[in-house]
Each structure stands twice: as C-alpha cells, then as structure tokens.
Image 1 (cartoon, rainbow, N blue to C red):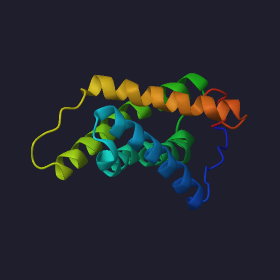
Image 2 (cartoon, helix red, strand yellow):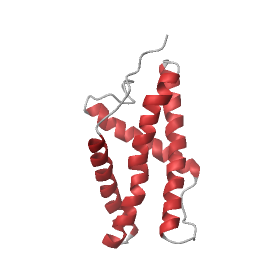
Image 3 (cartoon, helix red, strand yellow):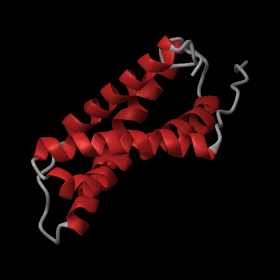
Image 4 (cartoon, rainbow, N blue to C red):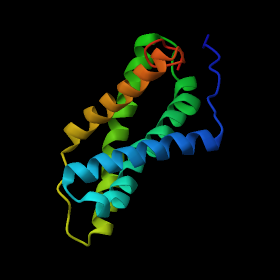
Amino acid sequence: MTEPWQPYCEPLRATLLRTFTIAIILGAALAIWRGSGWAGWPIATLLALWPALGGHFVELWFLNWLRPRLPTARTVQIAARLATWFLAGIFLALGMNLTAMALHGARPAHWPPWWIVGPAFIAIELIAHVVLQLRCRPSFYNGRG
C-alpha cells in the first residue's frame, strides 16, 4: 500500500516573490564576485533564475508527479530525490550555459563539468531544506516534504 502523498502547491505570487528575490540577491553577489558590477547584475540575475525558479519546478515535479509513483520506503524516496536533484543540476547548468552563450554571442562559456554541477545543486537543495526544517515545515530531512 502506498502512502497518500498530498500534492504540493502554493500561490504563484509567493513562488515568484521568493524565487525572484533569491535570483536578485544571487545575481548581485555573482556580479560583484565576477567584477562586472551593476552593469552585469541583470544578466547575472537572469542566470540565477535557472537554479532558483527552475529548482522550484524540479521540486514540484518530484513532489507531485514522481514521489507518488515511487515506493514509500524512505531509502527509495531519498535515493530518488538525490538522483532527481543531481540530474536537474546538470540540466539547469546547461540552461544557464546556453543562456549565457546567447547573451554573450556564439562563443562557448567556460562552465564547470557535470560531475561538479550535479552535486552543487544537491548542496543548494539541502541548504534550502535546512531552512524549511528550521521553520518546522515539511522538508527532505523530516520526510514530509
């Protein structure tokens, strides 16, 4: 028997406010770190939307489509979520790379390899779920989210 998972949903306004705020802050940090300053902030923010907004949609896909189709065993759920995050990290980094190439001309950008971006996205998601856990919300760590 499978556990009846509750579909996850939140108001679009809340999603957009959170993800755009994250992207704006990450974009500012990235622009400062890269030395492009305020001029590079819009492009850096656009690139940061890939993991911020894209990561949200990956979570929705996992929670509402994949998770209900998996066995309820905690180890299976953990393995599937980590694999989802790993693959999503690769595809989101590819999207960031293609966006950067489109904005900066045809020259390919130098991006970290897949075996770095996959685990990096897992780390980002684990940090995001620490925040949820600290707020006593459903998260990866408590098995409710």
